[in-house]
Image (tube, rainbow, N blue to C red; front, side, top):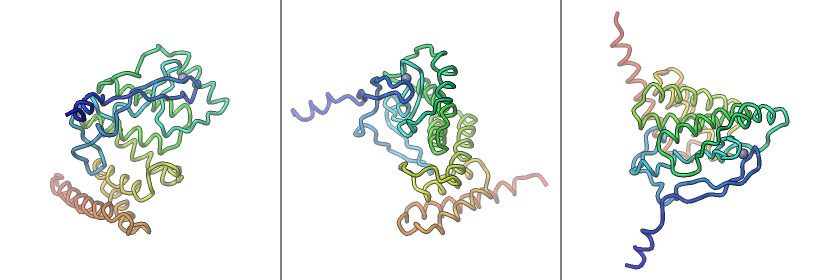
Length: 241
Ligand SMILES: [Zn+2]
């Protein structure tokens, strides 16, 4: 009994200490405890679905410095050159309205943090993998909201950024591997109706040198490959002659 009472007292959100990679100030921002961040369903592009909307970890992926407004994920590089610093100073910090994103976030607040982070990443010239991961998560939030146009807009941006990341191999040191990125480019293109590109990338997953270590992913690529072919044929049949 005592244990379950104690467990109940644990809040889903906790304060994480973060150091702003632009101004260097320390602040606390809410994150979701991993025990509460369990998804009950995952889509074919790895979009997680959570039971509790209010504790959706996707809303807490971005840190927004309350002092200067610079917004960043944990994947951002903390190296910012002198010229870039000036740009961020004039475009973000000087214009910052002191909005506060460090406490509980709803969907709207979550969406705003991604837009701030995408803008910050652009000014701070972050790697393509960082952009891609931001755009894809924002697309997932729009999917949950049922906003198909915005979802597709950000899925398309994510696909383009993953592709550039793959070409430049700038994903090194992140949690993502080459075969996962190739799969995602294939799957995002399938969702966007770009079937030719999609099939090429699924093929590169199936033939990848690491395929024996990623059997589940390779099988998934095969399934999605078939689905892409069926969708492509279906689309062709419905085209007016
Ligand atoms: Zn700051």
